[in-house]
Amino acid sequence: MKKAILIISALLLPALFYAQNTPDLKADSAAVIATALDYGDGFYSGDAARMEKAIHPDLNKVCPMVMPQTGKTFLIYSSYSSLIELSRAKLGLTEEANRKISVRVLKINENLACARLTSASFNDYLEMVKIDGQWKIVNVLWTFGPDSPNRNVPAGFKGEEDKPLVEQAVRDFIEGLYTSDVPRVEKVLHPEYKRATPIIMQQTGKTMINRDAASGILEAARAKAGELDRGKWNISINVLDLMDGLAFAELTVPTGTSYCQLAKIDGQWKIINILRKTAKQTK
Image 1: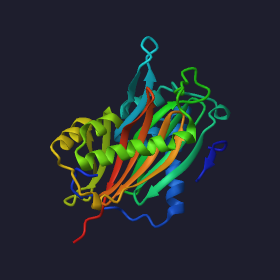
Image 2: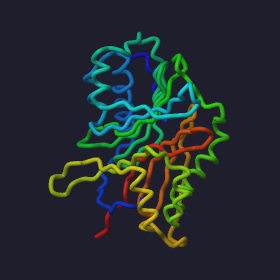
Image 3: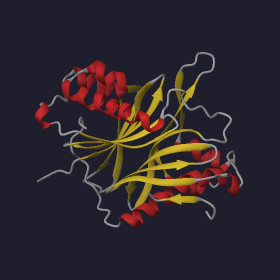
Image 4: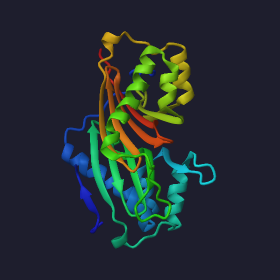
């Protein structure tokens, strides 16, 4: 795309994930950007083939929306098939000069990647997995862009000033799991939360996406399944980006790394999506 602005910039599952090596960071960054553009520009250009190439069949794409009659926030979803067919129907068709697409790579961790895509009508946080040499989008948290009549940035969103609050939400999540503090976890976990963990099957060499939901996390906490002595926590939290009431954060613990997508909902940061990379197995 000629006019696109390109800016390059754990707990409950056993460690079944074997990371694929990605030694060429520059090449991976370019490939991640290309995948993001196949997704974003594919929709704007009505190119269903590009959209299909970019997204994983197990995609979870979520947008927080406010119900005007109640002022409360709910989530809307887009599926793999709907994105492809909406693209094929050219419902997002927009002149190239008016798309205003920009992509920034936020993080590449071997075969996991996080990226930010902004455009005229949609702003998206993307989580990708590299499968058989091809980057695929598995999680998306998005909101409406600056040219959309539906744009609605939460009134309480303060940009960089929200970083400590985002970090605290992620800390409440992991420390709540480690201490079996169910209310602490429940406070920051959206009821429709989903976590994706790529697992390479030893029998076939193929990658599957394992998912779990809020109910499983909360019941495991009640069962004290994730309790851990404080001396073994070794928690690291890095807020990668904030945008329009959304946030991207990296959580690293001894058992692996989780890339958390959060939204500020009714004044409280909530974790909605996670892409998880478990620590490598040792022999």
